[in-house]
Image (cartoon, rainbow, N blue to C red; front, side, top):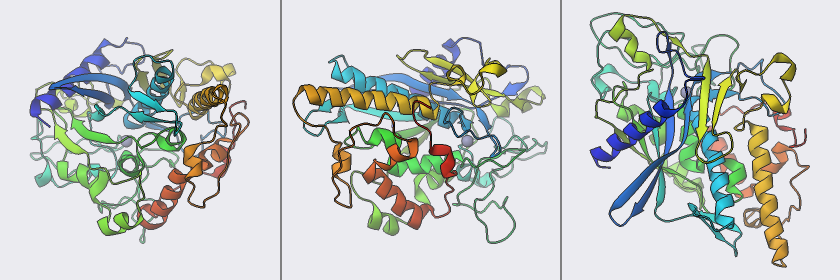
Length: 434
Ligand SMILES: [Zn+2]
């Protein structure tokens, strides 16, 4: 990627954030956050059209004592995760558009009954921070960007205080190991699966490094949308904002290099593959104004912003403000009701997916054929199954119908990700009507 391209991506992401209303944004005087965004690139001849299509900010996640069995709360509100969830809304909207022959990034293949991304469309991921977990562990000597100041110890967890000293220190993560032979869950050994950093009740949410590593094999679209797509959607590049303390080597290791290639090659089945996104930093002197490492410039101490933002292009309620896993401003009597839900919550995305699938079924019925998911026909067990109706289906069961995805994940988990923690099954028993 040409340096100008990374600079342009960083510029449009920061501008998009800037253009959003103030409501829900961190307080510049005393808060910091992370900004991530999904940028769509459309290459036509020698021109590249770039557009921010989803964006998220946030640094919080819920403890394991706060999880909801109704799919209505966000467990994980780190910027990277909010961005991905907002991006899923974008993908569903684009699928819908392609059916009505509006301009869309997808083509619908009426033979396979699946969508495919147009050839000239790709996605880059922008972020203003090294993803938490493995990508945040590096030696001072491996830092690729000379920090603005060397007075601050770099640490991605908010429980970790900045230190003053004459040197920049090694990068560390506050994420705890999911499994450890010894007792040291805070060990900084590289390449391992961790939960997210944070104080209080321990979270079950895995670090952004681990989640993004999974995107690089199974795609960013997740298991439900995989039932509607010919191929997974992979990121072409990870663009790091200027002013970010990071190590390219650590990010590459965390996102795709830490796995044994032979083991991977032995188990990966098309359409899945190991995606190797480029890691590029912008160098345009455009810094994220709410970044954590600005503290040292002003001598102030900043705290992580309590809420998050999720923005998606071209949908109803484009911008959502999150707090504690719910829509910000929800009054207590509305907790647990649809009014408290974000459109990027599990249950709302599930509902949007079912609506999309119903639309395809209707189209198939009009065409005089019965509808069955091609992904289901590709079942490794060879069992062909036409799931007529997802409306009353439980979330876990619906995901179970994404056979190829499920099968690939099972082998990956058994042989590569190994200690990946799954949330209790009781959290995925809801239906879209519940
Ligand atoms: Zn994170």
